[in-house]
Length: 137
Image (cartoon, rainbow, N blue to C red; front, side, top):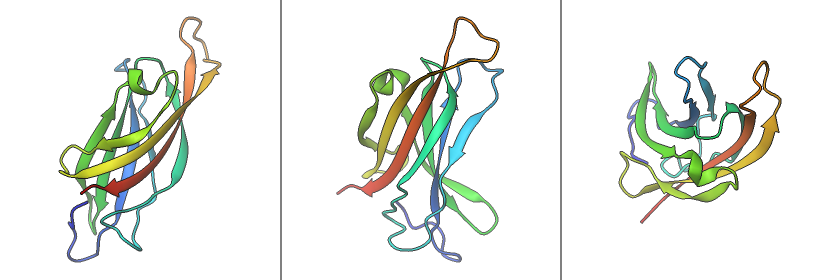
């Protein structure tokens, strides 16, 4: 990652958002803790989240932020299309747009259908997402 914060030190964190096909759907987003100790330019989060609801065909958008004193700055993004991780899961290093030579290691495991409230055709899915970052080159 890039050194972005001269006053408070680097504190990177990641959000994972389901990009719902239904524009009226509520936002589904989870957020890691910020890394403030150790190698903050090559952070390791090692966190696991259940991200729901998720419907087949929806992508995941992971955004790397730098937490500052007043607000957060976007460092880069990764978009993981549904067909890359559903239904068999995905494990791999993906490039972070906006950060040349930086990679995000992602593990996604679909956990199967969950009963959808009031819906008969579509079934909600649970998606388990783990994130860690590694810098390349």
